[in-house]
Length: 451
Image 1 (cartoon, rainbow, N blue to C red):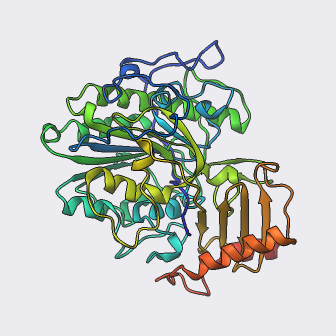
Image 2 (cartoon, rainbow, N blue to C red):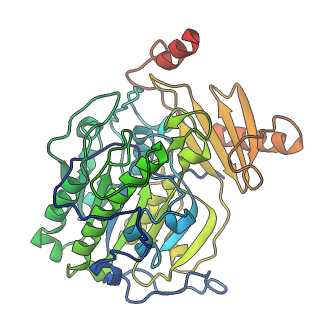
């Protein structure tokens, strides 16, 4: 059975003098700066974190619910609510206390264009009609918000990078905003955009028409991406991870401001909040930095929490994929999912159904800048196959979470390889429409030959 991984890659945002201030070097605790959203209207109580005894089924979401999805670029899974020692995201930590936390969630791929394309389509990027370039564009792809529009749901999105202007995602949205003032450099990102993203989100969500209609809203916050910029009043240290943590803290402040705004609206009690990431980030764990090009756990294990009215807070520890988000969101609205969607709705287990084990697939197709990488996660076993499956390596994540001791032989390796090949046979791979054989992987090959 084939099931895949979870959500986004992107970029950065522009400084604001009135940004809320935090001094991480002090005794800041996760409870600090909760603000009005600590009593967010969509969570009438603060339930226990432990698993539901016997998974008793409780009432589902409101029939007229809305969904707000907030994704953060490059946000690793090791956040405070998952055990990270630094309280770098107090507002999201507070939200998680009232949410269902999927502790082993996976992005669809390891960088933005592939992971978010797969998330919106509910399918592996190798199966989508894409250009094949690193900043891949998509044509004639049925992104799930299109089905919401057909059902009369207003669809809105706020993005903070110029890639999203022509990627092809906007065709699925009634309102699609790129925050003003962003620049485009294919090699880096210097912009700071969380203040503008939050403001644009308030403008769209504050439309009075939302009081009497159902809507789906998605904002992708970019500031932890690539260049780790300093923000006044935030100082975790001088190393890359320290500066990255500062970017997360900065972004968390504006997410908190947006959560406060949401909590003030009349539709808040019937609104579901999803928080996730498009991919993670490397800080030298596999002799690499940043993200993309590989499918290590540091790059594809991401946060995923869902705060839904009436859904008791708990952890779900089995593997889940960002591919599950498309059928889940459609399920919230009562919209029938396209038969081509590859994920499984999470709605049932949010409200108490048993947590069943499922395989997860992470898919990084060959692009103009990289060779193909693909991984299959089955329980605590993870098989990574390189290039065109020319060779594979098996890792045991329970005893080797940093993927440093691969196995390439033995009965367990053979079984996982067989499982992987069965999965690939069920795929319907699509050849890129622009970047052909002479284009794919050229940057990677040039780098290898130079070395």
